[in-house]
Image (cartoon, rainbow, N blue to C red):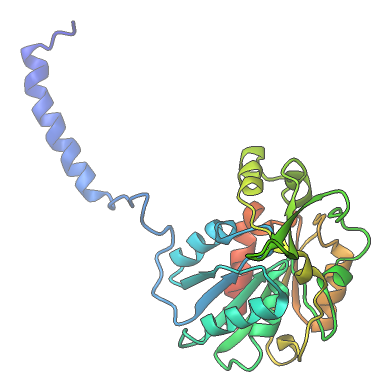
Length: 278
C-alpha cells in the first residue's frame, strides 16, 4: 500500500491549488457532441435523395457534417417504385420546404431530382453524386453503359410483386449480398459494406427501363457533379458524358459508387460549394 507522508499531504493542497489556478487560465475544452466548427444557422435547406439499393442511412456521415456547418438537412426516403412516381413523391415533399434548397441525388436519385426540381423556384442548385443525369427519353439502363459491373443477369436477385389475388404485376430487384461490397463499396471497411448490403432497399425492374419524361431541371438550374473515378456501377466514362452534357461543375474523387460513405468530406464540400456559388 502506498503511504503518504504528512509532508506530501500538506504539499498536496498547495499543488492542487496551483494546478487549479493554471487550468482556469486554459480555454474550456469542447465536448464530443459540440460541432468541430460551430457555425451560425444557414438559410439553405439541403435535401438528400438516396439511390437504388440504399436508404437514408447512406447519407449519415454527410448529414452530420452539414448539420455541424449549420445547415438544415432533410433526407428523403426515395420510394424506388418508378422514375415518375418517385419524382412526384419528392416534388410533394419539396413543396413543404420554404426558402432556398440545394437538392442532392445519388445514383438513381439523380433521375428523380432531375424531374422533381423542374418548376420549383426555391431550388437554387442541383448536386449529383455518382449519379444519373438524364435528358428526355433516357433510361437508367441506357445511361449505365455496357462496362458496368452491375450485370442484371448475374448480380441481381428478382422477387415477384403480387396483387391480392396472387397475380404478378412487377418485379423487385436486390443486389446479391455477397457481391454488393465489391460492386458498390470498394475501399469501404468490409464490416460497413456488409451492413449496407444487408440493409439495401429494392428497386423495381420497371424503374430501370422507364424513360425520363419532360424537360430536365439541369437546363434551368445550375448543377454540380461529383464523379467517383473507380465507380463500378456507373463507369467514369458514362458519368463524364452526362456531366458535360449538363454543363455541370465537375469534381473527381478516387471513390467507389458509394462515395458519400467512403469520402463524405469531399461530398459535403461540394454541396457547400454549390450553395455558396449559386
